[in-house]
Length: 547
Image (cartoon, rainbow, N blue to C red; front, top):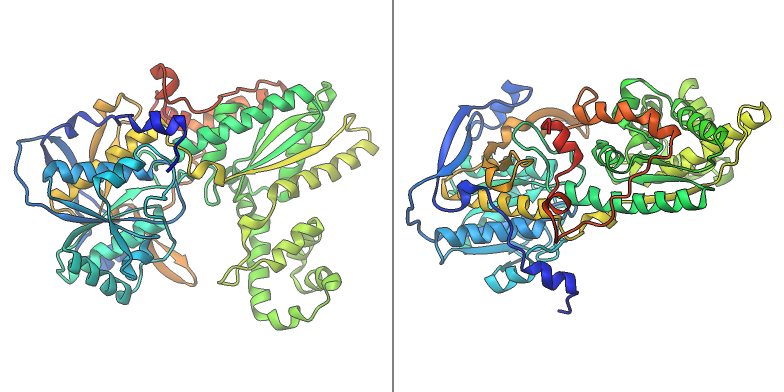
């Protein structure tokens, strides 16, 4: 394998660990827990794993443990630092007994069900330390939800003598880990299941999980390229750059990038929903800022847009819901309508309020809403080019204002979508350390006999030696939500809190950033150099922790 100079140098990096994990540990049990909502329903569904205590690791006495075989799965979308979770897990089980073995299931949860695996030896692990991506074993999106899958998985776990399974994933993957832990506990199979919090979207967090891994690195990657665009923007002074960022269910990425780069506009989906803003309200808000800057002679700027914005606009949400139902019931009839007549057909069939919203959309977006369906028959919102939708509608509004004398400038747009660029970047020092600690903590939870827990590392705005390692019962994070027509137990997504310090800080500055060109250029992630350059956590985390 050919390696870059950075890869070679980076392989030598030794991730920092919380002081409590640098030697023998003991698990200290805290208070019993309950789910964030729907306590009775969750308790009924998880009788064997509900109400367990919080766990905190402290220095303890050395004990000799028998060798154990552990399995690991990477589940869902990639996030920087996954390889370090596996490295930490490997080093952790080896520190307990050198004869312990780690098996990786190939291409996600499907590898467990299909018995597709490989042993992860020290030689393999060393190739992947401090690298980005999930390519050590690959990832997949197979959902573990049926008893048949659990039993198929148990066959190979039993055959390999695997005592514990670590599932590295987001909220859905960890929900599945919790269901699996409950199933194996009920059957008394003696297989523990531990989760690790992963997602660049940053929406898997609570008081015990400060941040999901990968969020730090991805936001730094996006902020670098946004900064580069802003430098170009301020140099040419003739374009408005509309930049869509990953984050379908929450706007954490857009907010963190805004705090890092100080754009002229950043839309926060949760605020749009809270204020019951229409699509026209959002467009008018952006257009006013464009017009105000033009009046100052500045016909350029940057607009950050969260990927899931359309689903947060109440009027669009209602339109999409009616469209989903209508097209599901009338798919056959719709398929026979000529493409040139489909728009008029839809307009004539929807309720008056949704019909007028649909009619106001640019042709390209209207088509995306009616053509691109997912396997469940729903609109694939992530395929909607929201950045183009907004810039087209802003252009139309500005053209009207120009004839009315309300807009004196020029408006030309460029479009960008940053997503995959950030998911497999080499982890920042923060993510390299955090992920290694999460993996090492998972090994200690296994050694302590725990199941149905998520690895937790807190106090991460402090130096790593002061981090607090432990475990949180996954049931503690759950509530009941409607999924595909029925109520299911799921980990509650963490949305941007409009009364939280990160948003309030952004809201206090945005009017100034809108008018004045006050861009920040963060530059690329630095892996070597002074702590204040290399080891900083996200601005979101620092503000949340009051730092």
